[in-house]
Image (tube, rainbow, N blue to C red):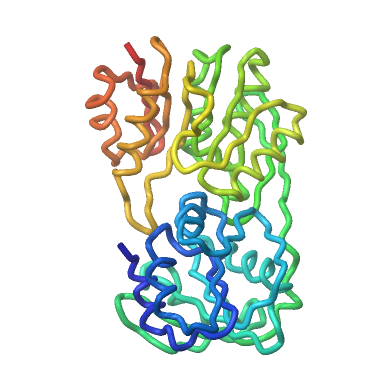
Length: 339
């Protein structure tokens, strides 16, 4: 299947010429759909920080730059950027691709009308650029971006200090990582209800900047910590967070639960529940099902979720009895034990 934004790109395929770079596309079938439609003298590459997207492009036998901050070994004639959920991430992506552009390179942006791209004009102005709307269809917009990228600051990971339950941590992050620049209310609530985790193998799933894993490891040195996320930006942030606090852990970029180790004593998460801008329970269902399969007998899954989401039902369907450890500020802490 193709996302609406990818259908919009195909609608404007005549704008794509020469060496083409697609930046942060969704994990859909774009690569397979786009390749047969391009001129024979065109070449296609992808830059993504998403493990699921990277796998799709690698299976299509295209060059894929999969990393937090890429190092390009070529320059491109055409670049298409998918408008990110985080406006800050657009600046990061533009700065990241700047070394791979020629003076004559064409930059296009595509985005869902409900995903923030309608404000691209004012956003581009703040970056010293100009956005020119070229097409409007499939509930999406297609823009051309002009101006110099040379003045954009080089992307860097920032560091801040946070204190939770008398534990002080240095937390590293960058635009595009979940709740960059702040500790969200749900995670703060979760960190106050993890006293049952003191040892064993522990997975921080959807680790983001690594604050959950770092908090657990700092308070329980005996745990064997694993942190995973689908985003290379997140896993790099987690790696830097652990290093900044002199903590040891294994950090893995993976779509879904990492393949190794085979089982865990505890899984903790502030799980993702979006595909693009929509709530997607298929992600949650897969995560919960995989968690039960990978937990040891007596192992726990502890997660935080918005109170309006149907996590209790999903957990009960898989685990049976589910305990509610806390409710506050629109969030709920759930704990499920594998019997």
